[in-house]
Image (cartoon, rainbow, N blue to C red; front, side, top):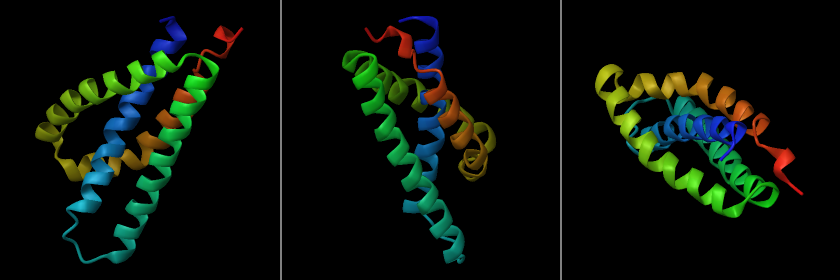
Length: 119
């Protein structure tokens, strides 16, 4: 895997970790603000759609095997990092950080796809 593919995989892992916490938050929501719940739900749905688009785009333009490897690696690495962060700062804070981290990492993971590898 070349350097730009590694960078893209790193952003995908961080993106996926924050997206997981937003999706998890909506399932376990116990607050009273339905507007906030709707906001998180829409954000998580948009993030999931972008994740699927990234997988297809990466597989189509670079390599399906690399796309699968990046996805599997992000599940394992992201879950380990996520558990450590959740214990350190809490899951709710991860949800709020996700509002900034998901768009930023989403932009960077798409921007760093090694399109030049396509022949």
